[in-house]
Image 1: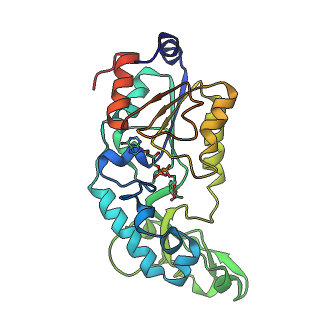
Image 2: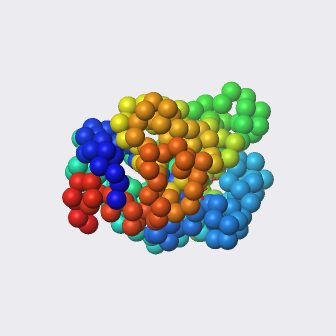
Length: 276
Ligand code: OAD
């Protein structure tokens, strides 16, 4: 149970930001990245599967890896932690979820304001091979996938819905029906920039919130990891939920040690009387 002073600040909060990482979905059966044994990066080298150079060198291998992950994620359902985050909307005027996860589970649980810092595994975007496109004359912007394309590669009859209809499934790497560019999951790979609009909105939320809950992240990846610190430096109440200590644990107002699916419903119950 949190001390009364913290409970009071939580109950008076008008904007709660919930910053989440892979641990949020661990109890839904999706592996985290940095668990020493089961973590995705313990089993695969991100340099082989999660960066643009790997995709350029071997698109089919990288596509197949994401299909495998997508199949695992499709089988997963939101856990009691995701549901508690969504129910927070009943207790607090404004809730912003800032997630590093690409699994869609916050939205499936009912959270409305979700900022996906690292993209979404189930959306597609074009892979632009700059050497190929810019090396062959003036590129145009494809009206179907918004990627750069060779002017002579366009199919004027293809439409944006044709891309939306393609899903992350087993088979050859799909191509944009408009320009033929290879399509890839719209996630952020190592060496890539975050979407500036999404990052900007997340910074605004970190700057505006009076409470930030930091759930299930090792805080090892920037710029995402700087958001809880930013809120902390501004004087927001920062509470961490994690079974293991992180660089934030000593500085947070409190750490709820344990899994998100247990600790978050308990926090809602004890603070706002919301029963699961
Ligand atoms: P990590 O795998 O680095 O960290 C997961 C955190 O979740 C650890 O601190 C665990 O202690 C904690 N954890 C484990 N089980 C939990 C549970 N049941 N409830 C709550 N917490 C639990 O994952 P992230 O911090 O999300 O980026 O990793 C950040 C980024 O690194 C990912 O978004 C991904 C990866 O490379 C990209 O793919 C761009």
